[in-house]
Length: 211
Image 1 (tube, rainbow, N blue to C red):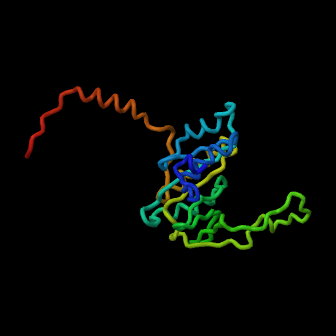
Image 2 (tube, one colour):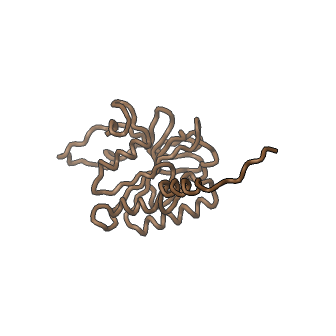
Image 3 (cartoon, rainbow, N blue to C red):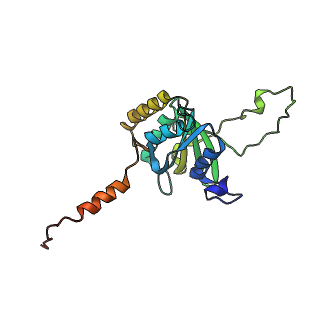
């Protein structure tokens, strides 16, 4: 799937590419990837209702770049608050050349699972399918400020009401901290804006005076 999203074989797809790949792997489970750091509620609704007109459980992915070479510390307070929301399914990111799946926080540290950890495969007819086959022996952690700025947050929206609750919760959080992404109703109509600009261009403008 990575080849479809600009990633070569044997290389990571990146947070944005990995999120986009889910859209073709999970139908009819709805998936929406909010690009450019903006969640448009009209697009999420369209994705959730695209199959039969009723709201289907929807995964919302938000790829983000929260800094240049390192995480902008002003965004740090928002991350634990967003991970604590009931709709959160975690966050993918990590350090350079080390991908992690973040599931929560303790103090100023991120708790994560390492997707590269392997365990013996469990046979279908195994009678001793204990939980140890499906759980990590330890939960590692890392300092929040050491997080790579490229990441993707995920939220599960089983109902439309849960999406409304998510938007309300984010609005409340973003009143207190720097918002890592924004929420709007629908994308701007650039075509209409361009037409209006061209129409306004026909009017005579006042001469500029150099002082």
